[in-house]
Image (tube, rainbow over all chains, first blue to last red; front, top):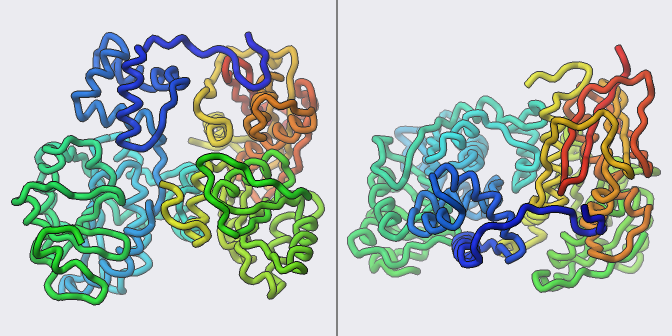
Length: 307
Length: 148
Length: 155
């Protein structure tokens, strides 16, 4: 056993072929900007080994070949190779846009109904859904109600959302301390969301790549940082299916670095793009009824070009 | 109390002209925080407890270089972090210094106390570098895009 | 997960230790739980550190590490690569480790309570006979032993 001060002894021997490592490292870099340097083969192998076994592959090389062609396995592999903690109020700007622009607009539009619906369409462990719940608690006018649908392809993630419990490492990520004390209580080593917010969120299993069940229409749909896991035809199919679930005048939000360039013309015509601060929102065509001072994309919406 | 040179690495942000005072009785923890905060463009100085921190703040004020940010541990000898915050908040000339506690104290009551005493933000140990950067972004001390 | 009045649940001690490890010591080499450790800490040369908690709950949290682990984590925390480190540096780093683990254990137990500053020694830990072990998490890191134990006064 080595006793050098810096490095620790014994790592398991690597069986993965160099070409396989290059392939998977390139994929992870392209999808997530995370760099896996050559000395980390053993880590990649350790993390992919359980997935390879589940997929029935003879070895890691065979599994990586599968990952190159199968979108679902690709997503699992990327999840396994990237840090899973997500942040509260991730990227901040969309939540600011929600509070400053989208919510006031929706409150005007839905004045008769006094109820808003939100869909977190790749909810993961639930930080997105509960972040929105916190904003609604703070900014929804008295007498209004809201409900949030949180869906994911992973039942393990849905269970996490239902439990509403987070480790303190997760609690450190982007959550203002004032919100921690207001909206969470300590349970053992974790923090649990308070019942008033917990009640706003319901979960449902849903695979975006397949036909959607009849989930109804939503004023705001959050489809953030998930389209990157799909190939272009699937991505377009999702945006097509999503259109009928965004209520007229509603909003669809993608991830900060995601764009919808190169949509086929008919799909492109289904959506308008509106720049809200640093955020680009998609709205069902016809939503933008009249120019607003904050909006600069009416002409862009008419021509389909990006602002 | 030591002046720390800025760490140099290709990914480090260029100096932003902002400075941070790191207050923790552990050299290892000060070292970790220094690397994180210097990597975000801050010039850093360190103190091992609350009284050292006050001494530093006085000296810095005298030459017109009040820090923009203080990272403060709770449990320290001589003067703890909670007391340091109450002392800092008594001084109008330090009104604009952002105070962020970085501590193992994680009971809700402790966090409430710290915020009531004037802490602007609170990070529970253990933390990742991203957590510090995200909190600083919330506080407006670090601009968006640094984390991408 | 029930928390007995005498001490924290083992699963919580494990979770806390793993979080401290992965936050500051990287996740390249995982901390792997070990179930067959002997009662005497299995390292010929070790570092140990302890903090005590007094108040709503009384007890102590102790970390024991082989010398290789102590040196490696000191290098990681100080970012000193292969530069020489002193005993004082190791004591400081190990002390901060037990401070973080102990501080989080404190917050699991009934409060309010206070945490002492860490006491660090080059060597295995020794515990007073009026204390009883209420939780013990054994692990290996790169093949080297790590132990976190919680003690409380005998009832």
